[in-house]
Image 1 (tube, rainbow, N blue to C red):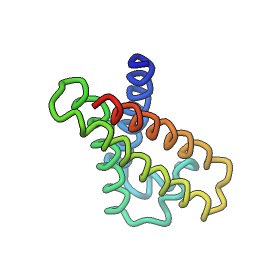
Image 2: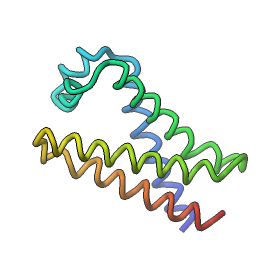
Image 3: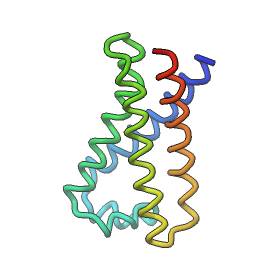
Length: 123
């Protein structure tokens, strides 16, 4: 089971590292121009940057503490943070009637909940 959890952690970390870096390196206008990021019209640039920072920190938190053995409790906590972030994404997309995209953050939230459940159990 440990290998499966590591794979899920790696996938989640890669997805959120990429998404977070995109939010941090692109302007709000560039993000809004992307059809997949139309939700950014509802948020200010500082809020978008904060979401990017949270995603990057979560990506790091999913891997580094468990891998190094230094404060491994931070890994399931990072996973719970991603659950909260993805629930916010589901709410945002639902409110905007973007029903086709809702399954993506919902699935990512479920994967993050799986990691949190497994890693809290391994402590």
